[in-house]
Structures are given as structure tokens and as C-alpha cells.
Image (cartoon, rainbow, N blue to C red):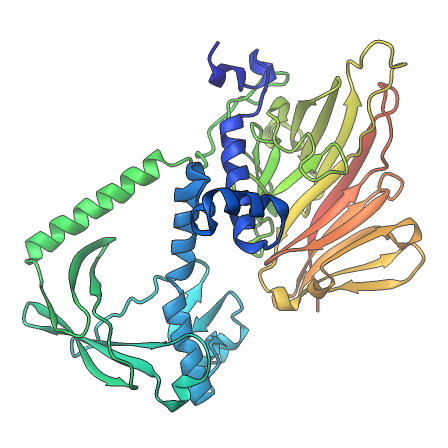
Amino acid sequence: MRWDIVCLDKRKGSLGVKSLSTLNEALLIKWSWRYAIEQEVLWKCVISGKYGEEEGGWCFRECEEVCRLALKRRYRLIPHIYTLFYVAHITGTPVATPTFFADPKDPSLRTVENSFLLGPLLIYARIYQLYSCKVDEHGKAEGVLFEDDGDGYEFTKGGYLLTYYVAELQSSVVSVRVSKTEGSWKRPKRCLHVQLLLGGGAKIDARGTDGEVLQITMPSEHEVSDLVSTSKERYRNCLESAKLIPDVQEVSGHKGIELSSTPIELKSSDWALKVVPWIGGRIISMMHLPSGTQWLHSKIEANGYGEYSGVEYWSAGWSEEYTIVERNLEQAGEEESLKLEGEIDGGLVIERQISLPKDNSKVFRVDSGIIARNVGAGSGGYSRLVCLRVHPIFNLLHPTESFVLFVSIDGSKHEVWPEASEQSYEGNLRPNGEWMLVDKCLRLALVNWFDITEVHKCLIHWGTRTVNLELWSEQRLVSKQSPLTISHEHEVRAIP
């Protein structure tokens, strides 16, 4: 039998063994990293003694390429950031500045929190392509690079090289040259690599010697058009071959059937939800329509709204394939809802029903439970020890203006800000059936109601522009007569 067949899921008739080659490569990458940072540990001394200090660090050949790419991506930013620190030392200008520094007269920029300036570059959402310069109305672009020994204070005595580069378009030729230099360092003899961006991902590569004039002849308009078209076609092919979230398809509204593996959409006048049954039955989109706010932080493989069957992170329930056993459509005269089941080990299932109440369009409701369907003989009808852990990951659109607010069972009021990192609340410190994520910039609060008799513990975990508001049941054995359940609702509320 082939190894890839052995690694298939148990429900597909195989053994469900993890791929050892993938796990081994990940482990080797981790050991390569530890080899670089640990000093006197015994295992490193053994490898260094056998292969030598320099060769020993690269004895894990299987993961060498992964390490090389990771280092290359990190260190290509160093020259740019190093130059910014030099400018900060000379002029006092911060390396990273708020976006409104670009135009202090524009008051709207003072509320922007999802971008900042790294020197002259705007960093917004994704990483900006560093070292790219656009010609101005005179066909000219400029850049600067600072270099020194990287240690000590010799740069204060002139021991550095500060290079000003100029790219100029004249007729159909782009000339890249050094306009002036500062410092006593001699320029090293090295290659200069220039990429001329044409648009649409198309570019022209040219190489020369640093310090000498490099001339690049622009292609004709027809050739540029062909290059751009080819680049766009290549990009389109990449998108088509990538794993994307498919469009929502029409599915049957009949009960008791399995639905195809497409995101299922539930919609009311206030909420638009998307659910992926085949990966943990998770909610991957939680759009509040009146405010246009996407509350969930998610991608198709992970995050979003999921549930675990244990206190451990990523315990069973978050990635299993769920079956849709019931779908009610609003036009059928019932509230719109979706019921899923996912099998976990030990004869247990996680059952989840997501519904949009017809009589209150402002909320959506989730009823979840761990149910014993077929526990083993000799167990007395009880399962293993389990805990229902509700694990949503919410977006923080304005991290410095967002916090969690609740009143605990004992009457004390709590405001939990991101500086708290992670906090858990049990007993009388639990929220009294309601807590909310407040965004002061949006003047909105996402309110979560729950039954305190079902929730044993509440946990808040702050990440990078994300926050988890988790509800934990008690941890115990379950039987057919005593399942673990948690029911809760969400609503968006305006705040003054």
C-alpha cells in the first residue's frame, strides 16, 4: 500500500497517519534555527565536533532551501531600514511615523490606524515593494542608501558611505547613476541590479556596476503592451491554480441531506454569514450589513469562528469535515438556519446550529453541543473527558481604540485593553451573561449574550489586530443523557 494512501483520513477508509516527511522537514527547520541561537548545549557541541562549526549549521540538507529563503526575505529589508536609522540619528525624524505625517493639514489622516510611514514609504495592509521609485513629472526619481561598518561610532568621523542615486528618463532611455556621495568609505566593486517596473507586474531587469552609469533602453509601446499582457496572463493563471474560496452556489433547502462543499451563506437584513462545512464547520465571514463591518478575522484554512472539544488549542473539532444535516430557508416560512454535525474521536459529535431569528433580524444565534452517539463498551455509557470551547477570532479595525467591556456576576465593572495580553475569568468574575467588543472609532460594540449556567470560564486573548472572546463549558464526561451545550447570540449596538 502506498504511503499517501495510509495518510488519508480514517473516514475515507485509511489509517489517518500524519505525513512523516512533512513533520520531519518542519522539525529540521526548527533544529536549524536552534543550532544558530543556542551556544553550549550538548547536542550542538556533538554536531560541531563532528562536522565543524560552519558545516554543522547546514547539516540538515532537507530544509536548507527553506531556511535560505526565509533569511533572504528578512535581510533584504536591512539596507533600507539601516538607512532610515541613519537619517533618524542625523535629523531626529522617527524611522516609523503615523500616516498623517505625510500631510499634517489633512485631518482625516489622523484617524487612520491601518497604515504608517516607513521613511517615505506607505505601509498599508500588505508589505509595500521596497526600493521602488516612480518618476516625477520631469521624468526623474531619486533614492538614497547609507552604509557603514555596522558597529561602533566611526560614522561620526566620516567612516561611512552615503550614496544618492538618480534615475532619469530621456527620450526612450532610462539612465541610473550616482548623483553624489558622502563619507570617506571607498565604494566596493559590486553588481548593481535595477528593475524597471512597466505595470501589471511586468518588469525589465538590467545589471551593471555600482557607481557607473547604467542605461536601459525602453521597449516600444507595442512591446510594453505585450509584456504587460503576458504578465497579467501569468498572474491570472496563478490565481486560477490557487486554492480560493468558491462562490456561493445554490443548494437545496430540503432537510436531512448533505450539501456540496461550497461556502453556505445565511443572510438577514442585518447579517451576512458564510460557513465552510468541510473545514471545521467554521463561520468564515460575519458581515454586519448596516455598518459594513467585517467582524471576523478569517481565511478558508483557519481562524474565523470555530469550536474545540478540549481545553487544548486546536483539539478535535476545529478542522474535521462537518455534514450539513438540515437547512431551513427564510422563504420557506421558517427562520433561516443551518445545522451541522462533525464526528470527533470516541463516538462523540459536535452539533452546531446557526440561525437568524425571523422575529429579530439584529441578532444571530449559535447553539452548540458535544453529544455522545456511540461510546465504547465498558465505559458505563460515558465518554472521555471533554470541554466545549467556543473560539471566535475577531478583527480589531482600530487596535488602540478597542477594548472589551463587561460587568461580572459580582457586580464589578471591567474594561480590558490589548495591553492585558490574555485574561481568563471564572466563578463570580465571569461576565454576567453579556460582554462586548467596543470600537470607539466606529462607535460600535459587538455584543455577545450567553447563558452563565452553561459557561464555566471566559477567556480574552489579544493578538496582532485580533482578539479572541472564548466561552468554555465545564470539563467533564458526557453521555447520551448529559451533553455539553453552549447557546449564545451576537448583536451590533451603537454606542455614544
